Image 1 (cartoon, rainbow, N blue to C red):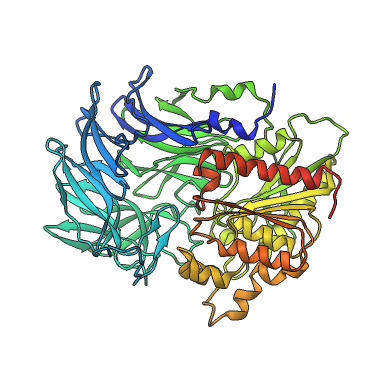
Image 2 (image 1 turned 90 degrees about the vertical axis):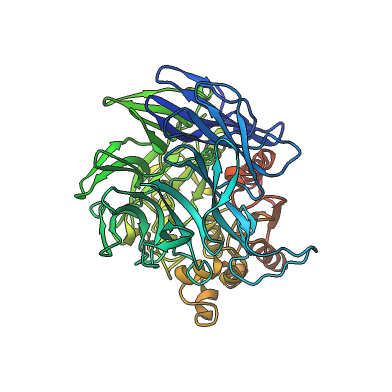
Length: 635
């Protein structure tokens, strides 16, 4: 049996975006074609007994059942001559898909109205007339957004699309930037931002009354999902931001008449979403579901993401547990869900009458490969706090032999590593590396206090990582302490930059989509103008010393570790100058550094970039580690 290679990326099938009606489940399966350098998706239907292909398009996605279950709406791009996103409906019993409407800037969300006569579509539009030339006249923040491009002068609005005629009607005002929508008692409720420039972390719940939108929440929370209840109250999935960005998102019961907000999940200090890292996840949908007095939701609990439910009295139950990552779910006559773990890619499962059953085997090919299963160990940090950590041995591990090791650092920082599949880790173990990974301070899944490193980047988090490496070397004698490498992306890229500027213990490093200078990050990226003040404190004028002190660029003269910088040229989350200035500084100072730039890619290169670029990225990381940790070193 062989280990996974970079090009095996093309074998993964990404199962997700479920919807359910009674005993039927419709879902999306995405294929990664390295040969054609593209992604192809189609819909499948599970009727309670067997799975069958349901649509034949190459870009079919985001299915939704109609209220009576007779139709399925979905999005696609079947017109090769058009760049617009297309909305289709198809009979659930089979037949031809019928094009309803097209939308210029894509479709963000779809849902049927309660009577099934219309499809609700959330889509961006221009709110001001665009100039005829190619000059950008920008008057607002944010002006661009990662993975989207230019967003100034645009807002997402709600259209109703008639199922019979395809006629479109915009129903929400242009000044609101809409995300989630639901219907209840003939009324349209939706989540929107009104002032994304001055209140970028605030999103509110609204109801449409005639042609006017009425705000129902107080303009200080971040509402990400909701369910209207029959008594006029609401279930909210929201973040109240008491601790800024590290605040956990919880499930609340909200009464708009009295303003009372009750935290239903107060007994579980965990985020009500999946924050585990995976590079073979694809599109997933995990919306709140209310059934028989219970709210169903996914939460990150340490290194696992499970399905929970909570009732209006605040009682919490774990519905689907285990050392795995529940990705999306839907509830009809039973619970359908997609899940993965560290050695098992995504598949569809059902939970019926207390019995769980695996339904699909799209990734059964993985059984023909030798995989390294992560071995968990606890690290007691120097301040007494326990840190979750893991190692993965090389797939051809031989007792008594010494192996080079690579420390992997996750992004966020408020995400987590755990029981989800990381193709990158398996590629490295197949090439003879030990992989070390952990959840240091700043990580999600361990409570707000654990996650809150605002103003202290490069301090306790850095110590935790170094103590994880120390403990791994102590426990596992097969790790060669003289051949250590490290890599990470986003916050993990920042931390990689920080580490090579503060210690020389690593002999190779690859920094990806990183931050090198908090001052430039503040003024150039899509989230910089509010993320940096929240995480570093103040702004570059009130806290100039703090911004520079926390910038890896300040410590460039200390770097001795050979460094490869990987960056996407359309990464608007950590924009290109973060890579260019760090590379220039290190090159100017005579350090060993190389720069790899990926055109046409954004911050999500490792997760959704062009397949050939994703393969190349993995080859560069593995090649850099092999060059400096295995081959004779020459500087």
